[in-house]
Length: 173
Image (cartoon, rainbow, N blue to C red; front, side):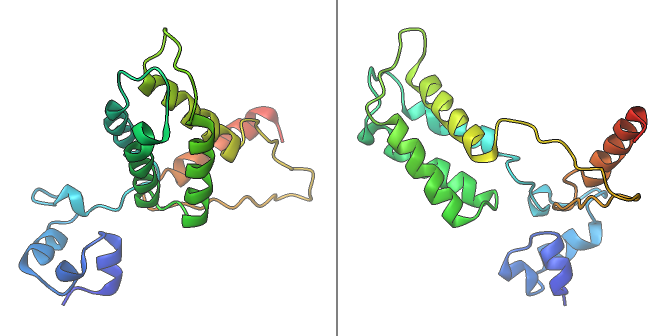
């Protein structure tokens, strides 16, 4: 029987985690072996978000003004893409509401397509949500300074830690 830990590690669905032959063969193959089903890998946050947004923005074409009717489906897809990227539900609700408020009634300039205008609004809202400014690391503590690195498997924590160490070494901190 497939363990809970392995089913979580490879993002198996409940039917697969129950021990179906396809799940067991995928687990035996392992992530670096031939026959491993790529769809069973855990996904990183925002990994497919750009692709999903690009596909949904094709619906908002040929409009001179963004209104609630022509962005409704796109906003639903943005909401679903963010939720599938493991963004918290309250954050997604606030984000979608803010994008909707900014987008409804916006005139589309001649140099932009409606999809590009909507992307510009989504990008501006993402920047305001996550912060557009960089913040300095506070390293004026007694060495060693502790920095918490958190993220999903394969998200690049070790690589980022190495780059950060090299950067700090070059600064002689």
